[in-house]
Picture 1 (cartoon, helix red, strand yellow):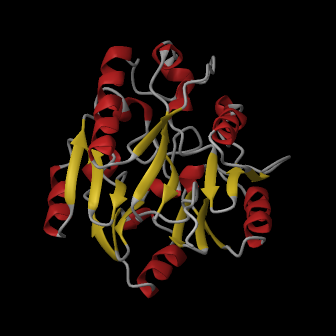
Picture 2 (cartoon, rainbow, N blue to C red):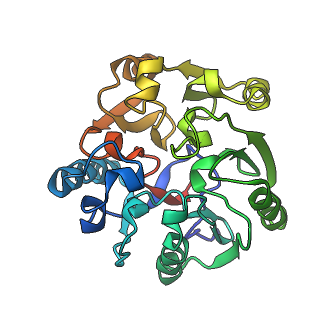
Length: 291
């Protein structure tokens, strides 16, 4: 008899069954933009309305949405639930944030997942740092990791040790400096898979070895224009299943590329939340169960 899995998201495009979200709260609205590297103050009502449109798209497409709303004072970025953890077939791998202001999000999300029946597989500890935005599943048993200002070599070493125990290979790639340590340039800032062999991407900043790995795997890259990469986060696209995606509005060129590639696309407003705070639909969701 087949046993139904309750958790496990070792992939980027399989049918999304369960996902964690965290609605914007007063902590984000009260955040000092200079301290948090936001472009402007967040209007809470407007941010929540945008977030609700994202959640609505997921619900419309049959995704079970789990709401993590435990109080986290002075954690304005905690809405970006993709970053503090990975959910494997064997449980949660609790990460350790490279942005110092985000320390503490990890255990809060791990506790929420434990209460939902997802055990802890392991933790990044000590001097190691890994943020979820620097991780991308190339297949069920291969994880690509970007090393930059948010994820370091010690974090990758620990990640490799933990995931090696469940048969996962970790490939690491150095990320570019780009606009410096205060900005958020994750590996997933540069690419989002939309089906097994297609991804939207901004290849100009990709590590060469990473590009070669994708090329060898036969992944077609839909190249977004610089303006939509730099200003409106066109590379931040969430696959709900192969060829069915959610993205931020304001990216007409990339949206057309996706539609021409056969994708069904839903959009939600980016200006009131994502464009101010450097996080789109991928960042705003933590997959818990994918096919």
